[in-house]
Figure 1 (cartoon, one colour):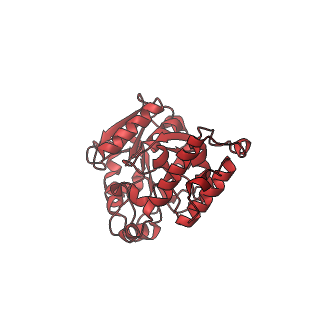
Figure 2 (cartoon, helix red, strand yellow):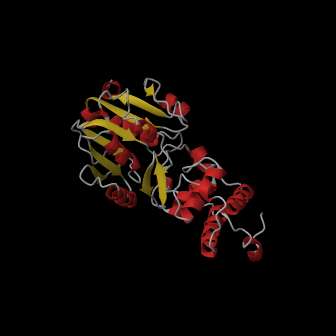
Figure 3 (cartoon, rainbow, N blue to C red):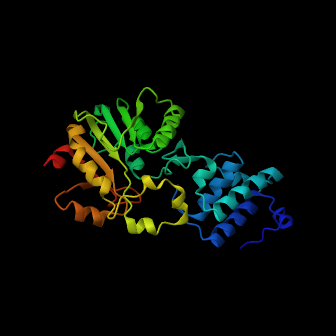
Length: 302
């Protein structure tokens, strides 16, 4: 463990000093990453720039700038929480970034990281021919509301319903909807999956990032993930408990020609075993090939 004597820490005078120290602390602590960044360097840079209220994309001009004593202390306090308590960075800063958009987060919601966001940045093209044709969108298991908000940006004419079972999550989602000024287009609904949603075939698009982590993987989660609401992660023995309900109930809520975009994470084998009759389109992103699927209403009905 790196030296933490107060007198020695006072020798950390520049951003470069603090970043080197952070890297040493991170590696010594054996941290796990995956809540917005996938490596120690990016996370250290983010935490430091956030602490100093500097633009998150502009490190180089400030590397050799000296920090004030209180700035150093604030950063070292964050490092201690990150390394000793394994608190994810987003919970330490109260924010997360997805596709260049800022979202408020706290421990009532999982930290935004869904690769569905990348697909929404492209308005789901070519699977959606004209983004202006999408009139109603349902974001199921909305959590912080990030995907619902990105869907509103992707489909300019759409009304978006953001649904979650957790009242706490819906409170965070409403804060983010207000942050983005989308109160007139994005609306929160409390429901256990689709139970409270009328079967009226009104949604042109359903987006769903449900709890899908299988039990064996839940039992082996790194400490960082244990800070997140477990109800937002756990998907039962094979990870498919909630997916089964979504696939069963979604068609009645989808308009003719409507589509379901569903994330299943690293559960491809379990999905294929549970639903051998389905032949979805697998949507690739920069980091995934078999984690997001697209199904048409007609496929689900048959």
